[in-house]
Amino acid sequence: DTGVSQNPRHKITKRGQNVTFRCDPISEHNRLYWYRQTLGQGPEFLTYFQNEAQLEKSRLLSDRFSAERPKGSFSTLEIQRTEQGDSAMYLCASSWDRGNEKLFFGSGTQLSVL
Amino acid sequence: DAKTTQPPSMDCAEGRAANLPCNHSTISGNEYVYWYRQIHSQGPQYIIHGLKNNETNEMASLIITEDRKSSTLILPHATLRDTAVYYCIVRVARAQKLVFGQGTRLTINP
Image (cartoon, rainbow over all chains, first blue to last red):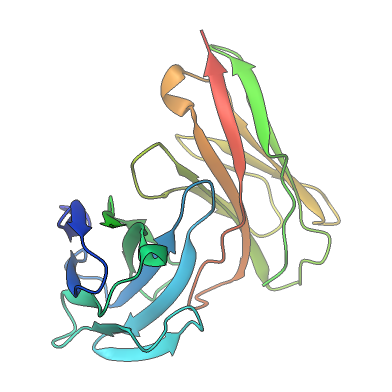
C-alpha cells in the first residue's frame, strides 16, 4: 500500500491559464474522489468516480472544471481559464466499495492563481 | 447526511486524555459516525467509526450515547503529534461521499 499520490504538490499559475492535476489512487481501490479545500474550511466534495464512470458532480464543479478517470485507475482534474477564486488545496481520495469503506486521502495539490 | 456540531477549538495537555464532543441529533438509524483528522498540510486521515456500540482501535475510542444523538472521540494519551483538525461526520454506509464540516481544531500543549 503506497498510499494515494498527487502531483504536483504545488502549482502557481497566472489567471486565465489552464492547469491539470493528477491523482494515483491505491491500486485496488475502485472509487476515487476529488475535494477542494480553502483556508480554514473543511474539504468540499467536487466529484466521484466508480471505476471509470463519473457518478456524481457537485454544483461547485463549474463548466471550467473537468475530471477524468479513463481506465479506472489514475484520474486527472483540469481547470480551464483559472480564476483567483480557484486558489485552494485540491485533494484526492480513494476507497474500496466494500464494508464501511474508509477514504484514504492524498496530500493534495496546492493551487495558487496570481 | 445529518449535520454535526463540534466546538471550533479545544486545548489539551500532552499526556492527558483528549475528549472531543460531537452532536448529531438528527442522525438516522442507518447512519454511522465517522471521525477523521487533518494534520497541517496533509490530507484527512481516517480515525474510527461506529454505529451504536462503543469502538476502540489503536488510535482512539469512540463513545456513542444510547440515543445516538451525540458522541465523543477519546485520544487516551495525547501527544504533540495529535495537534490537528478533527472532523465528525455522519454517513450512510457505502454512501458516495463524506460531507465535512469545519471540525474542531485540537491543540496539544507541552
